[in-house]
Amino acid sequence: MAQPAPPPYRRITDEIRRRIDTGELAPGDRVPSTRRITQEWGVAMATATKVLTTLRQEGLVRAVPGVGTVVAEPASPRAAGAAAPRERRPRETDRGLSRESVVRAAVRVADAEGLRALSMRRVAAEFGVSSMALYRHVAGKDELVLLMADAAFADIELPEPAPDGWRARMEAGARLQWELYRRHPWLAQYLSITRPQPMPRAMALIEWTMARVTGIDPVTLIHMAITLLNHVLATAAGFEDDLEAEQETGLDQNQWMAAVEPVFEGILTSGSYPMYAGISGADEGAVNLESIFEFGLARLLDGMATLIDRQAAGADGAG
Image 1: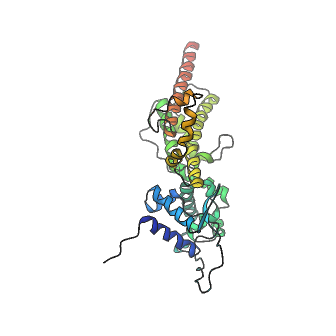
Image 2 (image 1 turned 45 degrees about the horizontal axis):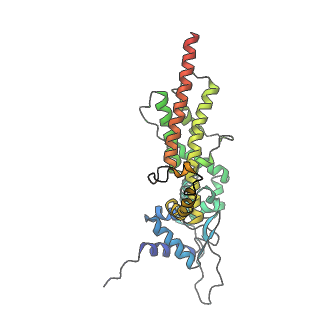
Image 3 (image 1 turned 120 degrees about the horizontal axis):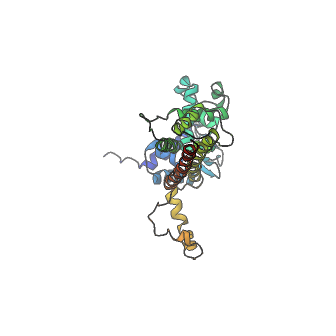
């Protein structure tokens, strides 16, 4: 009789253990996160969490605050006669190493594990090469992340036909950004309002977003564009925050909320916070990143409508 197939968590655990034993993952290297496990193997978050828990119990990995789960240092030398780990060898993909492939691999790592997990060494591990091999294609991490951001904006497809009205166009541009940051959680925190990077593709999206606003002086128009951009960026930064928190705690958002719910319940029932207590009976998820984005976007556009109408009225009066 055929042996039953091992459960998914065991198969994944065995594969990660193999990578550690063969040296593909060295001591100190990050192992796949729960989010990366769900994406790579198509399993539920609970299964991914069980994988990392099993590896920790076996002493193969350890959690490092602010970094994530990494391969643990061996507790003692290998027993005599035990097979030594095989020397890490370049994979077949080494021959296909290029600037484009390095950027694509870096985006995959950052999407799954966060920007803080990204390093030249981490990306090199995707190809089974030393980090020095990457420097033939990019100058360093700073250039790599800039190339990653530029590549992300290159994937945006502008709607055709484009909305004609200024409000519909601004709303469409904001939603294009929002979905981009959802796909790439690290991107919103990388972009800066005060120290912008020279990124023509990102600038082109903002130009497109504001193209139907007329009758506004250039300085005011730039303020409108940056205000809208800042709302999307600041709200979308929560995607990366949540990803990093999951890496550090091993808990997804639902698990985290379930863990702290008793503490919040005590605060809300104290009577000192009526505003917060007022939503205790609301549907679960009534207030989340999506609702904050939608509410803020609508209110911003309402305010800009008042500004545009006022400018138009002033122009008519001057005539």
